[in-house]
Image (tube, rainbow, N blue to C red):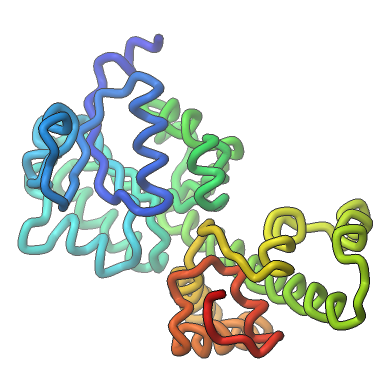
Length: 294
């Protein structure tokens, strides 16, 4: 085992659908990990879980964050019970959250004044990737800057990508979410049309997977769309939030994103119908006209 790993003490804040399996992988790979957990602790939780985030980060070499949005990251670090002032000088913060690039830049500047290195590292791959350690990582820093803790990335991700500059990871994640929007929507339309044409859709999907139309949503979410059951990989409401970041980023340089904007509008309607906490594959409900979870 890597000696740096043995000596390194980490804290993790954000036990959502992706953060929780990420934290479990780190523990399974030998990391000394303090985990902030808002819920009441069980007796057997005492060694690794903390109800006080400040206590969780005290004396840690690094803090890992995986929360929902700009406001959540701001609260974790600088809110009423924020941990920024309790982090050790020369420690690091890896932020796996998807937030606006400008927010990442702001946080980097504020933590730098405390001699703390902040890196934006949004991820893609859903709950499946988090469990398997096969996430794609978009890192807003150089490999050289991350050498002391790059082994963390290796435990969590299969595709580790360095984009030299704070906020660049978030910019790449914005592009990722634009592509997710288009491909999920296209698969939803194709699956619904195929059903209405009474095609043998299992055979159709098998044929499409080996051609130019193949995509991650086709391989992994077409079945969910066809049977209208949606195991959670990534919440629709979170993808909607991510699309807003991408669209705002485009507006800042006077670029229109008509397809992403349309998908965002569709997602908004589905959220208004109470479907925001379901997987993004529920986009097919807009095509089919269905409104409730079956």
